[in-house]
Image (cartoon, rainbow, N blue to C red; front, side, top):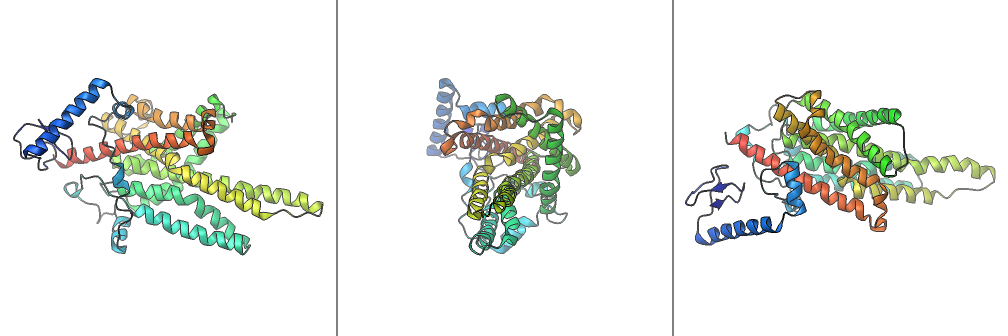
Length: 389
């Protein structure tokens, strides 16, 4: 048997092209030996037991070997790109720029624009920080908080836009989902908390928070996917990530605002005693909140909601329709359990383990991106199957 280097499909000896994706097969002796070596490695791995990645791959429902091609997410970041290339990405998804099914690439995407968005927002944040910290201008403070809180969630959302090989969701739709969907998911979440009440973040409270917040987001993701009508794994990832990015950005802005509120609440008290508060402590607290939440953002709400969006798509494609019955479908619940559990662990007392290096959140970020990469692989397999019909 010969394995295809592109889609891992097994082909008969002597075949020149893959029977699944149509790509040329490796046929010389050395390449055959490599293929046989890969087979032996797979057999050996199977005999010795599956790795946690393989187990996760099976749980997610991928019928191919786990292809964690994570390096492609960074390979083009440091390459030079033209303004026209960026514009081509930003104008995707319109009636005149959406490619036909046969023009869609089956290869792993090489996103890069997200890094430029991150850089632009980072520069804007730095300039606003100079206005606030060096020149003491309070007028720039709201902008600094908003730009700082939005930097990483928006950049991660753009990465998912680039990963969508179908290029059938416009930037206008993505921004709409980010703004309206992010705010709406916060409203739904607060409504649910008004019913179940707020709890201390012990194990019960943490997992209850995970359930409530993930339900709050997935309800809005469902609404946007139903209106979108373009059901695919990659578009599910994108719409989910857009809602999650909005949720994360507005939540982070709120946390960054807390030191400002505390400062002004205490300023009156100190003034009554003829004392003056030091604003540098407030600025330090704002920066710490923005940097910490920005550092952890790629492993949080953005990716959790992206998985939930994909769960809805997979369940909808299996049922042949998208309606509220998906929320009780086993295919949806199986995948939706992943962000709920990860969110619960993130907020639980377990996060205190190695807290000085944020060991638990970083480990959970690795796990959630393994799941996302598996889903991207499934999405590209879906592209291959549809376009090869």
